[in-house]
Length: 258
Image (cartoon, rainbow, N blue to C red; front, side):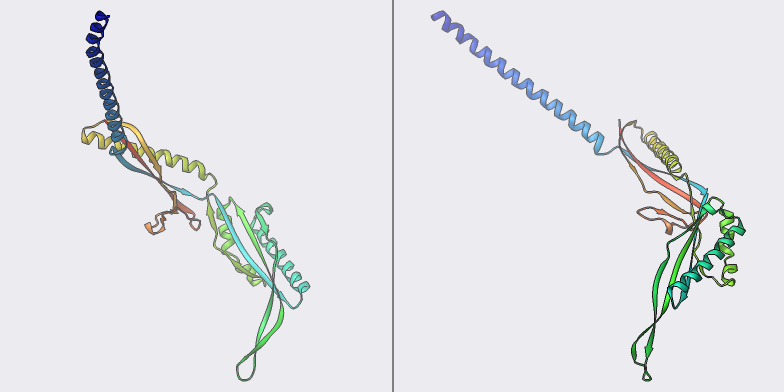
């Protein structure tokens, strides 16, 4: 029994020393792991190199949309509809003579409203309204890939007006059919431009480019060709009034450094 107590007495300091060593090693390991994680976090998030790349391309619209509104007025709905129908036939003949395809023409539903005349007494005071008749409105829309032809038609509506049609022409609207492909090409070009700027900055500052931390795509801007910066918008813009256009996009990249 005495020998056993002696043995336990000898082992206690050794066991205590081992426990202290294990705890110390664990603390050191945790500190190393935390420090490395913190360094990596700072390297990835709190610095690095950022650059914004841009790309633009000039292009021409390949689809045009032109709208015009015409109206008729009569004391009765039947007469108003009859007059509007005659004007519709005149417009169809007009477009057909210019070579506009029938499938490219759409006539809207007819809108109808009542028209009243205001009455005043001899003293100039308002005394009420008198029903005058019915006014009908209809819109014709032409959508075509033949931009030159539709532009010509939109400029020559005086022929319709001289023929007695109460016609109001809107300015043509210009679109691009394969806009999605154009956008993808611009994103690729702007991303490449941003990466080239990152590489130049790294080369000039004597560091190496690490991994990509973040990327942000800017808004698309489609403006009239050779337009001023006033056309640009923080939410993006899409010009439809000009046949010749310029598309622009920006991409921002942020890379860590080594």
